Image (cartoon, rainbow, N blue to C red; front, side, top):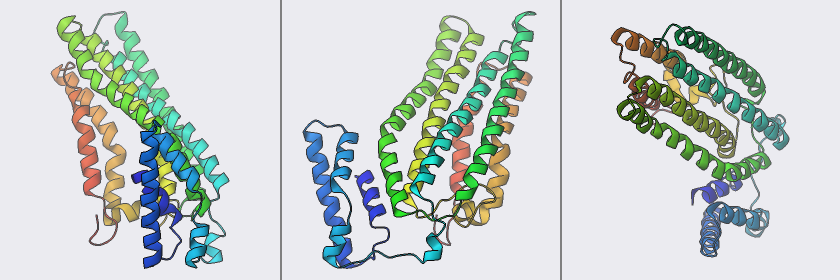
Length: 324
């Protein structure tokens, strides 16, 4: 069970690796997993079972005392500036606000695309569609730029600071608590994205309302992307602080544990590539649509753009020599 295993990894993070501690960890994992399956058989949900297992388990201090093992302690200077749990809670509150604002800004872009398709429908609707498009784009840019700059300032003081064990355990609890919401949001987001095709076909092929179909396509896709981005950002902010003993960032001017550790020598290319990628895709979409008048299917560029982006980013991941 990955969640339980991750939780144990956090607890044993500062415990010396010896045959005795490794066996103790494996035994605890087996006991916790057995109890987890017992709770499932009693009718509890996955989240309830995991939560009960973790809450009943407590700490490993008594176990370490029996094994006569002491936790490794970092030099005092290393933990003088450690991220405490109250700072983490405050950061997560800001992360929620940032996730909502960023996702809303991106949703406005999709809504802008949903109205601009009416630009050729008549002398009355066309001007309104064009004006609405620029207004929505402007609002989206303001929301994204504002929230990104504000959040970067709030996040910067935490970058490359060590995390206390208490903070990492709290992050594990928050990850567990939000897991159900994340799964629901992700599922609904994917469902809205999948619905775009049936909705487009229904309006364009059955009702012969191609423009309306394209508009609804973007609305449905926008809602789906909103849900995916919003829940993913929140969930990853918890998970990120539960898996590593320091706070890392993907900002260009980050510390040792951020982009350069993830992408190595490919970091300059990654920063050069990912920033203009999506704006270029949007420009390309409008260029192709206007030149070929293919609004009915030119939106497929977004379907292919996502996997291409993910593939290129994954190909450039690099941490240490010989490791991907």
